[in-house]
Length: 117
Image (cartoon, rainbow, N blue to C red; front, side, top):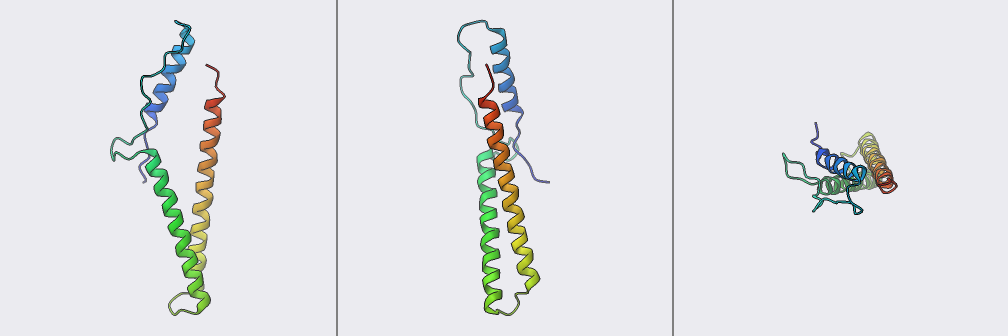
């Protein structure tokens, strides 16, 4: 199972800001002193590092699929059509998954930006 970044810290910060806004104790919104990056406490890896790793992995899968397809077209021994098709499908599925993650991130960002404080 893949370890994911812990989002509890971000959710807690959002709850604190919401509570401060609801209390309305002052005319200025009290913001956290520093917004910490989301970091997985077990591995020390940030979400940006995880996302970059995913992008690099997809790039590698696409490069491997392209290399295998070229090798098959050139008639290199040991490269079968089913291997080429499997590697191309893996690259395609990986790219589609990354696109969906990106779309969800953009949607979440837009939701946060449209929140009223």
